[in-house]
Image (cartoon, rainbow, N blue to C red; front, top):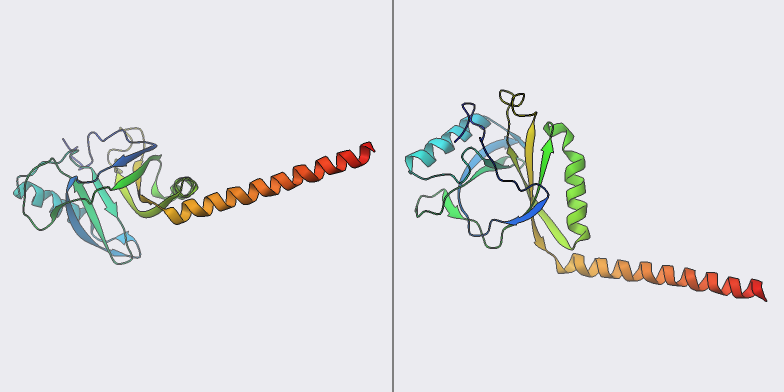
Length: 194
């Protein structure tokens, strides 16, 4: 069920997890943007909801829309139940489709530190960060009754051999550097003891 304002009544508990939505059926609606800011977002969101109703499809989490912004044309993705539909905007996500998820409490202006932290954690674990999806879980109408603004941040990632090799080289350099420091300290100790 969606709330009267259009926000999802319930959403998955994916906070601080890696999930794989590979093969999941979705409805994808393109939306115009200007420098990553959606234009007429509510109109395109409603158009997508009407299209899903016309196709007699069912959402896995009604009202949960994953928004991918871009310079001039982004998209709104909704997760659907596993049904068969040959419609042009309905397709399956590639398999695997891995996402790192974090729940942000606050408005979009305070999200940058969370995004940086997520990106550095992905890179430090040998993964290549790709596009970002946002799921607005509350709007100004329902935020106060539901514990404040909540935005789910989802970062698509893929394993990267290049990043993993670079991390191994960096660790090896640090180990050599620490090893040479230890050797220099040991040499200094033996020199002072004589």
